[in-house]
Length: 87
Image (cartoon, rainbow, N blue to C red; front, side, top):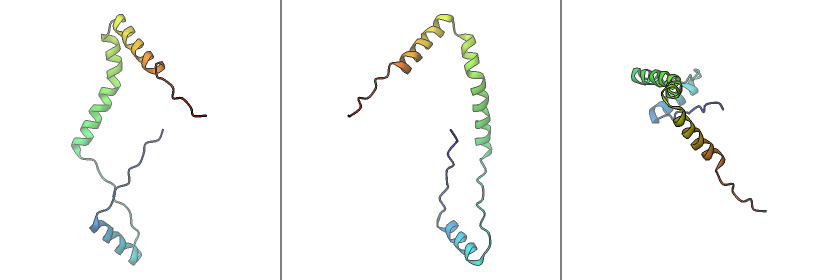
């Protein structure tokens, strides 16, 4: 599924600037928002942890623990009650 693109809403001053630029015929290019350094670092840490997490968890769990988790997942997946359809 493609990621949703969030449209940023312009504040009053930005909207006024856009209207002026459109009225004088200059192209209006939206300024891309640059993520802060902290956001970039945190995103990189999240990607790294996501790549390692499942594999490391698999290695550290015993066979009984893996079985327990698998059963819980299967019950959650298949144990959902279906809604009755109104005919």
